[in-house]
Image: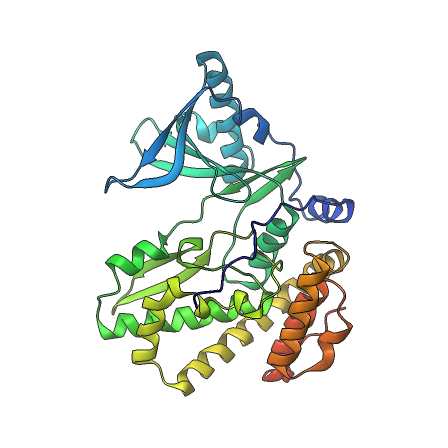
Length: 352
């Protein structure tokens, strides 16, 4: 869909006291060894070019030697916090190999490349400015999806572990030409991914905002699509913005689905994913209710966008329950309840 773009660049929303209390209760709020502002003190930068010679929209940044030594120590400790709950014995042989900065994203993230000096194996993590939209997105990903991600917040800084996978736009260029069996599995996963995004109203899942994790299996491959950008959690007013199927950037995968999927199969996989979400709620119900209680009281969009999305969801679902919603959090909560109750009343759990 040509016009399915954000109406304007989204501004970060501050983390209010209720959300901070939630983060503390669920151990997402921890003292960090490094802050976002520390990484802003670079003195030089160069464009980061990929293996094909193309600009990546990231810049590699450089610091004075004394400052870099301090950053190297604190970033290693940050990585230990993310990966080993702060056990520094595990990072003896690690060092910071590179720090990249992206001015393209809403949170202007820093990406830190950590390398093992003994075998040259490397990993990444991210240091970003806090945005309550992103935090709600990360939490809903943890609670309602099959994926898990480690992140911690301290003041105006959030650090996140790396989400592995092939960027979907790169995957579509190189790996769509495959066996029919693998294409069917890929199309099935996209339907499930599409459903996960819509149930919890995660927007802007264009091909460069999610990755595809491909795992070789006994026969063919298994696929998992994972969001990597959560800044557009419940912000825009257009309903189609929360359905990846409407982004033209996803057309190559969509066309594969059209080629191999019947309408009956699409419905089956949608219902399967809703059932799996309902099962996850059984395990996370108390924490999910805590999150939604905070989210319904928070201001993470504009009145105009809330009114628009409310109207479009009423029209889409042919259901008046959205009319009483006053916030984006209300709309998310109502959408979860409605979509899980439509076909799976026996699995529906009441959200407080």
